Image (cartoon, rainbow, N blue to C red):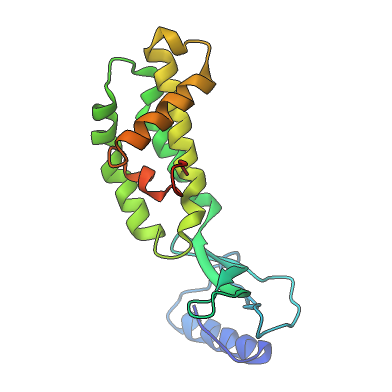
Length: 187
């Protein structure tokens, strides 16, 4: 990742980098190498590429709240990328809680919490709210698990969700992702 003042400067750095890498018998990856315009309130120019993914974060223009003034403005900030959210869903799916009704909630929490805490620690540094879809997916998975485990929820996913919210209110620390919630609502 190289920051430049102008597009002309960025293109010249890119060409110089290609020459230097060719001397080392290496080359830039054509789909991973591009020039991106970091658009925000201070940079109003136009470009077709205004976002990129790097180390699991998606950098793009988004609305943010100022730390001191609390005013909302457009900033070029990172948040967890969509491909990483899909990988998180796949990891949760691979744990296969839905098909293991012999487990208890404590067993699920013991297996799931270390993974989710790691995600929150790494991806929650910037735009923590971008992790809400992951938290909702986990809650949906647990509600489906409840539906399969208990006969009273067999055909009532909505009641299983309400029961899960009740458990969350009583024991917020059971699952790591429940601490991402806003007030009494789960994320």
